[in-house]
Image 1 (tube, helix red, strand yellow):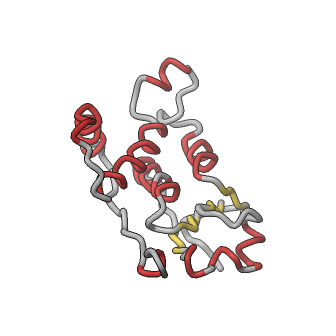
Image 2 (tube, helix red, strand yellow):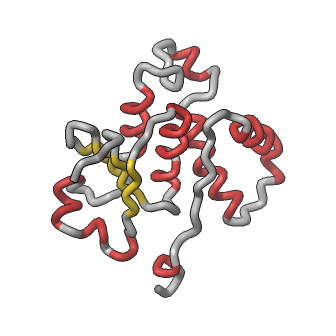
Image 3 (cartoon, rainbow, N blue to C red):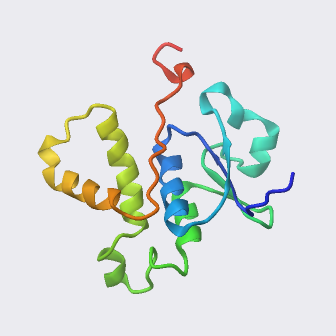
Length: 152
């Protein structure tokens, strides 16, 4: 199958590990094809998926050269290399909106959406507001599907 964007992201939409890759792609303006994978319906258990990622986890990034890169943090570093989101200087890395911000935002945003009381974390709410003002930010968090509900 030909991918006109050069990148494919195999992900489960409700996963925060998968989510944190999508905002970085948006911030970088990188077009990609999103391939939804339902981890609760066994889609990572196929032989085809195992060829992409023997660990059978999501997300997996397929590059233009048909190479497969699993693990969200590895994908973040791969995408951010050579951009301001992954500065070479360790001090700079800690001092601006970086891939670490994107990753933490993904986890924290999902906790907030799940109804966890974020009031004790007022400074985190201010940080959310800063992140939400970033150009290219995406809001595509989806709740877990019915097949992931307790007892399903």
